[in-house]
Image 1 (cartoon, one colour):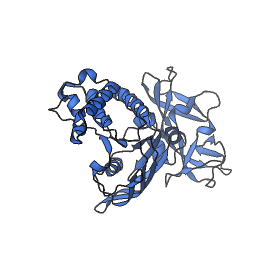
Image 2 (tube, rainbow, N blue to C red):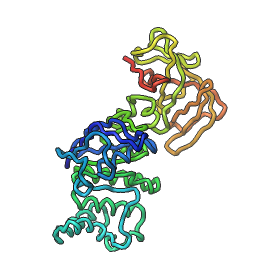
Image 3 (cartoon, rainbow, N blue to C red):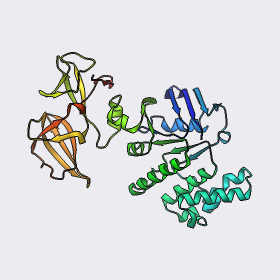
Length: 357
């Protein structure tokens, strides 16, 4: 498989910027996930890599080849779409054969490729069926099989699981990732679903309003987010953001008169400076003994894995996630204990992280 280099790529529609100065180096065999809300530019970037959109500024290289002006058919990439894009009048086998027939591949080679791909994807008993006779998950497997038989330089996935129900999405996440590892295939995967990004990626590229917010392994974006956007987008339930102030020695922060200790000293700011305090819901512990904060329980949601407790923390909304099902009751006042290592600080104006050292 092949490395892909995206260097200083920008895109405008008229006067509206869609992508700004995008730089990503995708290693051979790597699984990269582009994640962000609708309109952030992730699908546009994928389409530029595929050659379906023109590059406004910058360069895209596949291997050592500059492909800015290269038509899609000459880029040797396989794209799997959200809509499956199967030919309804063709059988599963014929859908998988079609691209190879257009390339005038030898018949024996076509059959070997189709049989190998169908075996990997569990499609052997479905080869004679038409797409209308398949479930959504089966159609998505056929679309993947059609891509695999081409043996492309890289795979591009454009929100391929969006049309599937939750249980099937979970199954297909596993199957796509396992297949990618088995093939050693360079892959770029677009999604707005942070669960897909966290469970599938070697590295995540978090995009917002046309800009890269952070690139890194899933755990890095979760534990060490660069800004409020990444911190709030990655993780479920979402991170809590509370208004606070730094104290004079910058090793304590106050929230509504309550003190939270930091793991070190804030590297920027002075006494009384406003900060945004970020707290992961699952890292806050209910504790009647020596609590850092107190809050009133507003509502309790049972998820099966645990409970989500919605709180009013001195006028600010807050959630905690508990695996202990002995949750408090609505209206109850509870104490909260927070480890200093779990307290993250952000600038309330720029949203950027305030580091602690």
